[in-house]
Length: 171
Image (tube, rainbow, N blue to C red; front, side):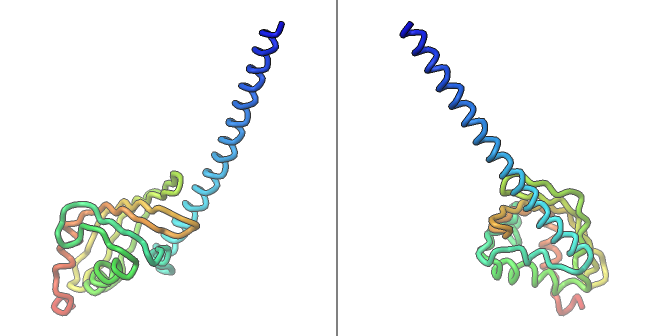
């Protein structure tokens, strides 16, 4: 009889532990799902504003963001430390060579945990009068609605070619 009570006690504890773990995981899953949707919506709204010409997606960036442009292009690939570093070395030189801003066409925005993945194409007229086009996949790591890290995939050769133009001559 004592052995049966021991087995019953162990079984009861096991069931209770499983229920506690399952309920805890369910609560965490619900919190993760809500965080994912919030992050996805923040980024989607910023890109919709950019598409409409009413917002700057770079406003989502933390001042200490770490932005990595993948690839091996010596002109643009690498790690940019901080928002000011990114803007001064890529965004501002890019803008200097354009007669109109880059217009994004978003294909899809996904969220997975603290990551938001954006697939989009960008197009705009250069100061020389031709059209710049590129395809992008950016992975944003979010923390409390702010982008703290980015991994950016794009045609770095096309981007570097644009940046190699003399902005004074291009205009």
